[in-house]
Length: 322
Ligand SMILES: [Fe+2]
Ligand SMILES: [Fe+2]
Image (cartoon, rainbow, N blue to C red; front, side, top):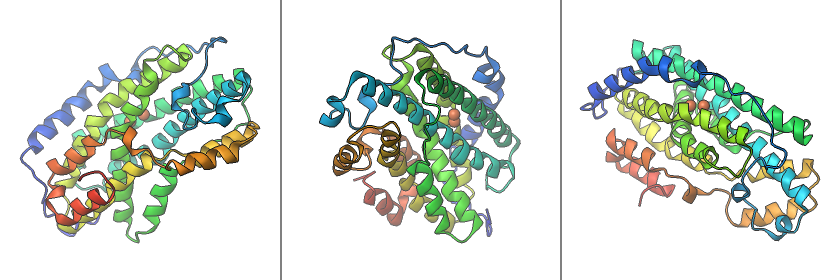
């Protein structure tokens, strides 16, 4: 990022503590990371579903409720493929590109050896998660005969790219990417928790999600630490721009991704796909109530972003603070 002379305007009192924590997270990686452990052996249980019905945005709709058990089962398999595809897109299009920005040394405050080490390790974790998740999706596609189903790009990724295009400077585009990665890494543990402990789905699916979550429980505090170090080195203009963007990925993450659902339902021949998804849209395209975004708001408060009236307006406009 073009610093233009770093003003170091963040609240820096906690930075020694943040640096110690980052070093600890980086040094524990060889003992902690799932990539260092015995790999899961795929297996399939024919009498269990792939996904939880309660996570379908239309599970209470009459069109879904009145469909055959076979169709419901196919929809649940699509839900699992979609859940996995969202994970893969987060890893490959949001988190790892930000990690690369940091490794290239283009992000202020994140050029120290410990930051670089932690980020290199995170990239390895994320690529391993893609392997785990794709392996699970291949198993489902094979047993459910869904090899040809295509999952389009998620709004979470599309909106991030659209927002980046609104900026002309490379540092501004990297900032949008970093804010989206920070939000995604903060929310992904909760997202994975939805499936990581249930006995109502395929055990292998649950174990895959639990393995991934094991690593993400650490990525969340790690990205919070990176954000604190990054923000402490920004100029006032840069901090204002970051504060303006930060609430947006929260809404993108909460998107119910109904366009993707429509595409999948049409691919498997669900008869009233368009009508059912239209009715879902009337209930709202994002589900902010399902997300615990307090970590993002408290981070913003801790680093002093919310001291500015413009930043508070930005958060309150998106319904994140009152
Ligand atoms: Fe991951
Ligand atoms: Fe992660």
